[in-house]
Length: 298
Image 1 (tube, one colour):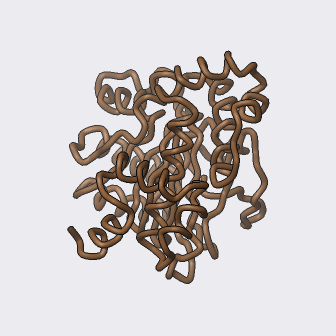
Image 2 (image 1 turned 180 degrees about the vertical axis):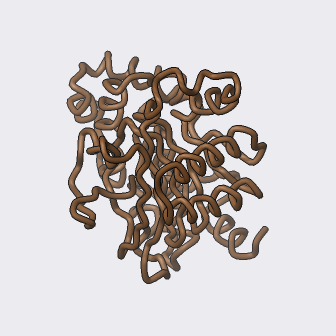
Image 3 (image 1 turned 30 degrees about the horizontal axis):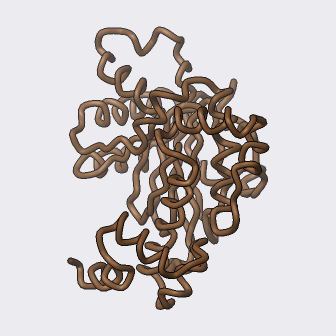
């Protein structure tokens, strides 16, 4: 989820496996969040999660993907998929607000989703490990039901959940956020190892990162780690860290007036000429052109 919940408050601890908010008393949890900012740890849990951002700007991490988010961001996160949302310090909103729905995928039995009438929902849930970004009219319809879901319980909540999942399953307004993660990480043990690695990268990419240090986080030899990491992300460690740094640079260029040199060093690059060259390669423009195009709406 967006943060750790305890007695109605958010704690910024780093869970290995987030404690379920569902249980014997309810199968579907609906949480209406209002916080100074979102800063929860990179985590995973056995529940499927639907998150709608009402207000807040920042960075969404899901699997090996890092993307900017803004108000009206709506994402379905599969079971055991590492994820988190983190607000930027430059956000102009007074509060970060969201509605989060969590459901145990087996709340009605392991064969419930296999009935013919739910075949499309079952197919969609089987792909949800990579995260599903929901847009267009589908987003509006799902959000309307999420708001209603927060106000009801019992059978009505279950029916609304089925409606929302059916809307997503039948929609063309969806994008898979990290398709490679879905096909290569299939167990909670895999998710936990990947969570440790990527949490370390999220925390450290603005500084120095060595193959040795990341391998130790993964409890693997450097050679084994390189094979493992490439099999999960289809990219090298250097490529993933570079993408994280460039994404941070884009965020700073869009949301601040900082100079290119400041953006370069605050994003983890130690050399301005290398930063400019890498930025142009990945984004097709110089940092200053990127800022100008963004502000002009090009």
